[in-house]
Image (cartoon, rainbow over all chains, first blue to last red; front, top):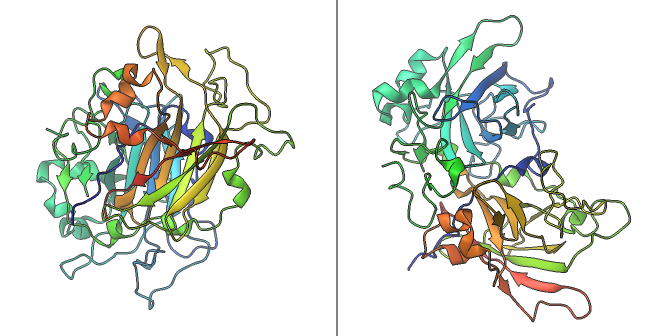
Length: 192
Length: 224
């Protein structure tokens, strides 16, 4: 059967924040798991901060289960207070974004193994005509990352663009993840 | 080329007439991946709790007053590539008011009036038949800084969160017969063969006597 033609994508524009509000605390105090903070910047081809970027986050919970009918592993727990979805805006002056969540557990891959812990991210902005899919992996998971189903399919010299650095600081474990839309160290974006 | 993989029906990342794409467009190839559970799930279904009032932009400012402008019904169906309805899709919209002014702190250069009874935001979730429906006012065109005397055609921004990550779509809905369409680099960034799909259709059967004009905008999501 012929496929229906798609509705084309358009830019989210400069005013998306009037509707697509930030959800930058994905996990409150009562959500089980290791709390983490993720921070970074979105950068353009000149290395300048993108002051009006939208990042959407999708992740499994600490037990490695997605809150979604497609994840049928009922033996793993869900938590009412955790959807696994977040939205953050980059700061208008600095381009910095940040959110707090729990570190996701490992989820299955299609080859029968387990993926490394990761966040799925959708990045868009004024000037971006089609949103971009990427992933954030955790810099303190070198073994899991080396064996990851998706990461292994990324050209070796570009994998580091998907791995967040551990930031030494006091309380909440913190990871730094810059998204480079263009140029040196351009972040890997996926065709799903 | 980064754009080759996705061209099809969508705009390229780089479309020079829309200047902001020049430094914000990836240049490397997209990396094709086999979808895993991470891509076969997504946040859409977690958003079931929507207030019905959210779909009426003419009154949802909550002031007790009604928005000024040409009252407009915008409805349609969200479908997948097989033509099947996509139920449970979160549809979020935002738009300028009838004078072309957005309720946003960055909008400072266009001296058009704000309407205290209009926020310009709405949301709803598609039903079992994939349908959604908003009541709003027709947005006005407004100027922007892309090139001399640049004006955006009247449009409504649409964000759709379907059943999986792969079905995500952000687009804009336009109105038929708008003379600004052919001058607009954002509209024209979409390929010639697909850009007309972003233009809603006037439907006189939907138009309600002594009440509102009706426009139909069906959306086909990727990733099915």
